[in-house]
Image (cartoon, rainbow over all chains, first blue to last red; front, side):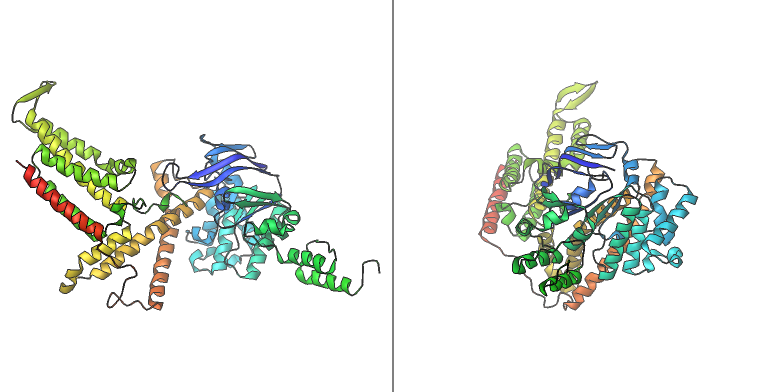
Length: 290
Length: 265
């Protein structure tokens, strides 16, 4: 689904001493089927932004279009339920939302609320569990008996079982071990490709933004600071530094290789080790047409 | 950064009233509540009102917050007023509505009682508006200090109070977070039949309890790890201190009491 923000502002607790402008005059659009990363410093408005995507928050000013749905300041949308079925949100630490007696029941909770029939729910549970690599033996266990990583997978399965068209991920891998982080991110990426989802990822990891996103929005103090493709943005070190963001290691490596040795390496999603090998190869005097 | 940021109804500012020692505030309010009942003439009420309104003015709290604090009791004030108005049968008839005589005495009594109510609530809400919950608990611990002699667990009580106050915003944030997560999974907390709405509370309460218990355990562990072993010999980071402003407050209050007794009938 195509998503567009048109001059959207959001103010927490207007007309009180605690008034806080969380979003200011945001205008951007997200193409259907794209993988967009939203990055920015803590308190830059990322989380507020994504809560607008399924109507949890209503813009104080401006208009949002999500597919055929419209969220307009001061106007109540009567189709929020439908919108929420189509836009699945995985919040930070989603395992905190678990409550059912068994894993299966918890995964079924979302689809049940949206009126999916039991047969279809069973199919979806199986599919979601397969995607998140949860052992099927756990389905009848209590979610509170599981390890942290498994609980996270259960919660994610619960959102996947809604079969959303738009997947919104708010730091879905925070607090997981590195291999778990990669597994989960790869899983989201595969789903994104396979089901042609529109994915919005909020992340603090520049590495994830670089490797998965095709477009990046940088937020700063509630405003859209920059937008562009990962390669475009990450090569402007000073622009990132101004908002306390780091350049991903690989990009820093490329920039440095150019500066120190005058060698232009092309980034095609290589890992740091692969890039180092390429650089060494070129430094030894080797080139591609040798 | 959400509505849950408001702790109690404290409004931060740097006014004279904010800077007063919380013990002074609590003690003065206690005595004020007592002396309000001694007023019996228009002048004496005037003196009391002057003190309350003056403090409200000095506190720099916007007027609408004070009014907001009064909201839940407007009805009570109005009710007492009307009750006195219609039930008192003394003095001359002032006027009559629908054949029911309203006496002058009733008007006066009703007005006086409502005014008393108003003043009491104004002064006490001023306390919570200008004092952080932590200051209030500290002050209560100090003021109840003498009870330690009779083995009353003053410190534990104060600790419990401050821990629960500390976790109100946290739990509210947690509630908001979980309710948003569940709303995203299609729970509707706002509409639907009563039965459905009660059911919708379960996915909210279960995770909330789970995290509250987990938090309590972690807190206990963290406290022990840092050597907490009750109030014995424990010092304070911020000692409460009686300053010049407090002394001024006492002087003003003594003057108020004198003025009150001079203006009584």
